[in-house]
Image (tube, rainbow, N blue to C red; front, top):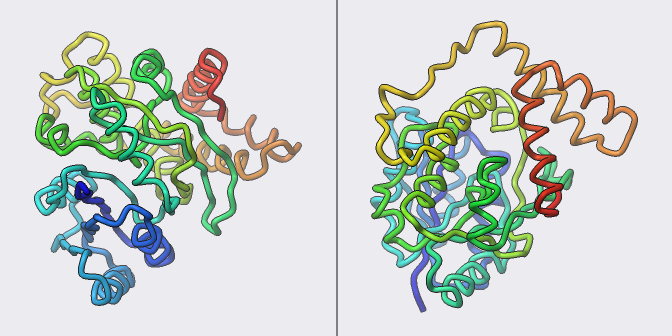
Length: 304
């Protein structure tokens, strides 16, 4: 049985980390190690992961002395991953017990593939399901839709040599996952998704639906253009990546737009939800994102 390393970067997720870890420990696939990178949490996260690790010898804890950001945490954690496969999970998400087994089975049955994700359900801070997302299954579909939305979310499983080929993550936060997928496709690595809801992704204040999403939209647009030109793997990230002014009026407007969009999702199929959706359109980046997702939904009939 091949070993799977599950890489989990965490920062101030004391409300959710216990459930996130337990969902990894409850996987039906048994030969796993969980590598947790604590990015200098200031709440009770560290105490909780220490407590759980004492009872489970397959948990490795790595710590940053100062908060360094997710790409630094991920790349540091990769150095401790000893598995034949490397999977991702976040400290506020919940994994279905069959997720790793199904992803392993997919890669073994489709050996030409190097990375596989799965469908997901979105939950709010309280754990209530508020949406679900299906993603393209085949590499062909993934390549056809990559311009509309990220065709695979971070809850993927990849062969270790894929990470070796890409030399880990680049500093494109908060679009590091999209960057990773685009670089894989550029190198000819085949990517797919298991047609199964394998993970519950939490939408909460501080994640990519809210404060950081403007930066994510701008950087994602930039990366997509470079991918289409065939130079995604040769650009100088440090000097070429767009810079975002966190204090200008566009940023403030987009922050309100994201707040309204989150409320629209929480109140979908209601008049209140429709009103929130209209209010969210104050940001051109939100409008662009909604249009892209609707085109993707209609063209590929995968649904959101």
